[in-house]
Length: 536
Image (cartoon, rainbow, N blue to C red; front, side, top):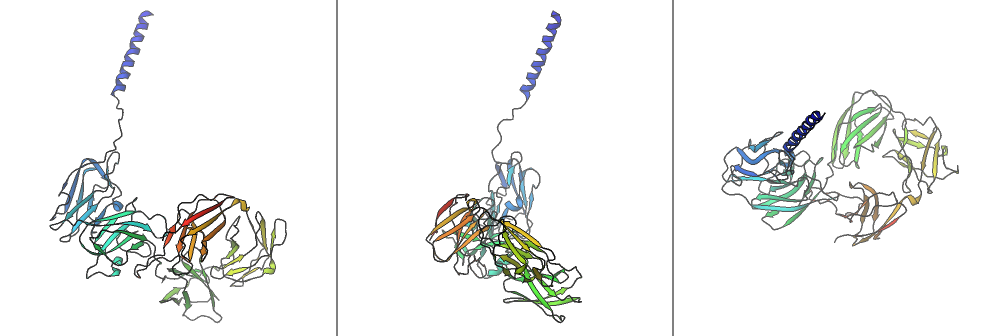
């Protein structure tokens, strides 16, 4: 037993020693590498002059890779043919830039890598590396600096392209639609300031684009634009301010399409307010038409009767100075029958009205077949208003707090454009909350310049509530659902009751917008008083 015990102890000791040795051999991991890669050399050297080659190599002290190069890399001036960049999708100890474009003479070029260069392991970025060379004897060294704002929102978009067009003999305002700029930079993903470097002395047009297609030209439909009136002179010790905005798209009618037996949709771009549609082709006796705006798309629904046999028709579409003739080809589709739905379900606020919408145009409502009662079955008086453009009936009611209401609408209450009616009895309910479930806001405006459009908006800048102030600096928002709002005022310069954006070709800036400091969240059964001082 004693010899056996000694052997057992020896075996256990040996195992513990081996385990200990194994543990001592395992790496501890050490500190995480937080150092960015280091550039050891560039061939040709950065800021070289009289550049004649077609390849640039930038060597690092460790393996690197390039991330998000499509957004991060900005070349100024832009090249018609993009260079080939290596590595893409892998790691390397150097970056290769193979130039495929013909370089201009006596021109300074800059490659702005943003934060796309990172080390291979921890992805520590080499921030805002710029490689610059000149095809002439000197490097242009002037700069243009400024601040980026959004005309309507609190914060500007990220990745804004800021551009300089040379105001020479070939310049025209329309150049921004078809040609790339002379100089360009980008605010990337976190900056609201910009600096265009390596600019030569001269006169320029300064503008900015939220360039959706990344083609350095202005697409009115998709891009935001900001510009400075007139031209700037370089050098000049000035910090410029650019405000980005969406232009109202120039009106354009698009090809119509049959969507029902007697329903044609007319898509459009821009402002439809003065859009008119007229059929030019021969129509049957008693032909009538109605136009209804689709509430969710840029489309007008053209309803007509009677249905008739035809292969195609010509339509004249006008909008102020706009005139176009469109050909429509008819298709055999099923007829639409009258359907009615309510716009808001559940509870409605005290400043809302119960509203019904039809899928075919209404022509008549028989109010004798409508009954409105509350939870106590007491008859409640109501009015009826019709919006022919949206094909909606609203029912203004003097609502009481914490009440249930029920509409009963007998068969034949509604008649549509095709003599269709509701065949069944319609029952719609809605309710109101207690006013103690809402909050109230009083805004005292300082330095007010009337008229003002005062708005409560959400975090994305979408309008939730709006008041129009013409003479009183006190604006009230009552019975507001509890949540976080932001307060802003629009200086309604042309007194038309709505926000007007700018226009580049007309040299018009958007109407001025001012935000209040972030307000407290609206709470139920609580009143807020906000002092809103507008800057002079």
